[in-house]
Image (cartoon, rainbow, N blue to C red):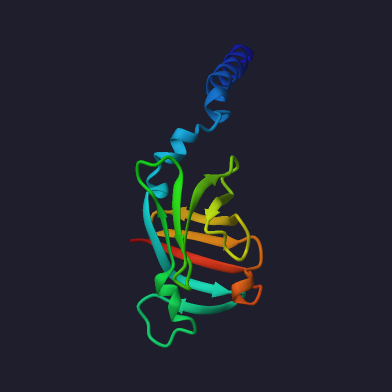
Length: 155
């Protein structure tokens, strides 16, 4: 019985040592940029300004129908280039980055500079191809300084 306990402890130790490098793997930016989530275009499906739903794709009577123009395009073959179109129809181009802890998506060096500043940062609530949910980190001056949530779908 004692030999079995020693054998089990040794087995657990060996397996733990072998699996440790897998669990501590450093994230490679190439892994992120090749991820299908960060390619192609996404459009607004449901948008909340504060706690109020102001847009639902495919319905009539939206409070802010301009969200039908809202679009995020991860430009293929250009490194980390992003093209972002606001509900107002204004389009900005810049560089995107995804945080090491997989919690924020940033658009930086935007041209022209949006009224909210040279960068936009979103908290990533969910990241699946047809269920991509972003929440603004900073209040948007265009929407009455609300924190907004964008449920996006692949275009």
